[in-house]
Image 1 (spheres, rainbow, N blue to C red):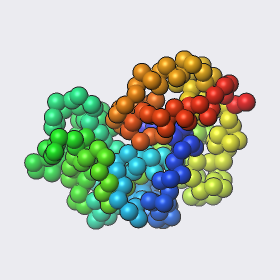
Image 2 (image 1 turned 135 degrees about the vertical axis):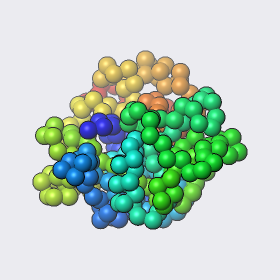
Image 3 (image 1 turned 180 degrees about the vertical axis):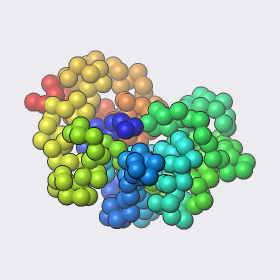
Image 4 (image 1 turned 90 degrees about the horizontal axis):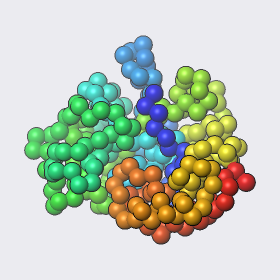
Length: 260
């Protein structure tokens, strides 16, 4: 399992994104990379935007549906993902750390997996116009770096590996097979939803300090990250790549002891 945590962003503040994506198609295209076939047991699918989206909107859309932007740290996984999405240009879960030397330094996977394998298209990455920090791929599986905040009509490669009930099987596959209920079709089993289990650590929106209380200490942590923060910023509560007033409002909405 890659063990990518996604529940916090999934539950709160993402409904505006739902008009851009078609979860039905993601469910229809979902395929398991089976362990017996040399895979990792994860599920992969394609989300097709109905309009242009940014990389951060694509990332949030995946989290809204219980997964994350697919990561492809090996040639085998890259090939499998592209066999699932077909001849579509897609966003992938790679990004460049802020302040890295351009254009090729500091690239990472959202899941924290080692950045060793690469499949850049000839001449890429090139950091065109000075702000290309996110990853997409061409239909053939070769990669390109793309802009931070420019909406583009790419597809979205989504990956599921969550196992919230710790039974050793990816939840999404069990949902598709009718073994776990998902009444709101968001890719998370009902038994693992914050509505049913509000004391889950991931369900305490705004608890940046991890003490199960949203208070002044969390405001201080949020303010310390104010501004553009790239792809991996725990203080970016609405998952738009920036820490600003929107995140402060979400933090204040969860003020007090979590689960009460």
